[in-house]
Amino acid sequence: MKMFAMLAVSVAALGSTNVFAQSKTRAQVYQELIEAQQNGLNFVTDASYPDVNPAFQGTVEYLKKQAIAKAESANRMAKAASDAAVPGN
Image 1 (tube, rainbow, N blue to C red):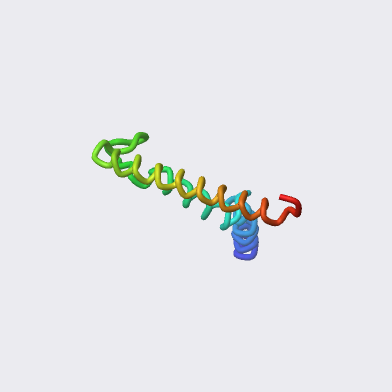
Image 2: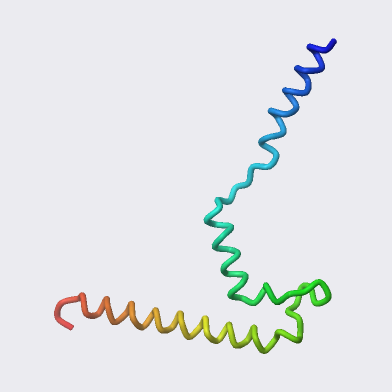
């Protein structure tokens, strides 16, 4: 009887390990976290969910403008680098 109980517990333990498996990697989850922070989602509070807390609205708008400006700057630099690399320009 004890052997049967031990076997049942071990089978249940082995079968339950796949329940927690996810389709995302750590890197994907980390990237989603960074994007959420850049989009101002770390300024969502329990009282304001799912919107940004009104006290932080100005901060979120400022951070979004900074992120847009940074992306535009990176795009301009990448375009300039690719234009410089192409002979005949």
